[in-house]
Length: 349
Image (cartoon, rainbow, N blue to C red):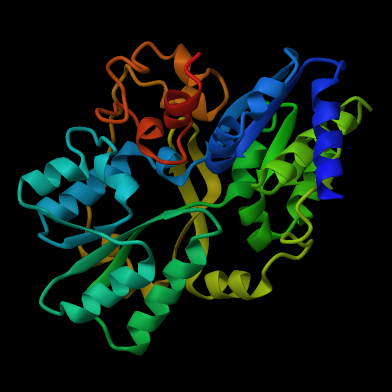
């Protein structure tokens, strides 16, 4: 049955003869999977897929990298971070540069790993670089909660966690249809996406397998031809209307909303998170009195335009020339979820 559904979805996509449509892949993983699976090759010429701000490393501003470098070199803390962040350029230096100058940069795979490292190395001050959306924020909260329970005082987080709903609002005129990230909606639920329909915003929640992506695109194109705003949850085996109440409660207990800077999008009110005052001892900015940084991105880099769907990575003059995965100029070429890295790997146009 699933094979027949896959064939039917493919037929709908290949046979689409409706009006021109721009579909934004909000999630960087969707961008990579659609390329890897060859789905782009099935699309009629009037169907355009554009990238969005769904790569957490990509939307993290230059100033955040500057803060991390400052902590590593000026405050001599041990930075625990996901590997993708190490080579993201700051205003003057990346974390890789900081490491070459004696900064201690330790790669981890989760906030729990960072908290554990702090526990095992009480002589070191440890800061976890907490970036990501609703899917990774609960894990960061758990690490802080556990640190407090275990009396660990040498652990804190430099927080750049963001929430997607406000980004949808900011980008609602950038595309005809949003391809919503299923893992984010698994946490948040679908209520906001349904409410956006009243503002004329259309979208479908998609999973990550070939069948799920084909189904979501086929459903999106079918509804688009009807000429009315719509929302469809095409990932019901994982995504519910309410989302994960437990994860939502955990985050709400430890964090509260704040304004946040997104690379390319500027400051979006209420789109960031920070620890509540009662958990402030685990906030690295407070603990180490980090000065305000004014990050300066390389002017040749068009990551900001890519993240807003204003251009394709291949439209950037440095793409694939000066800017490569080995020598990235911008964050979108570094991250495993970045649009530029996807175009470089699968589809230089």
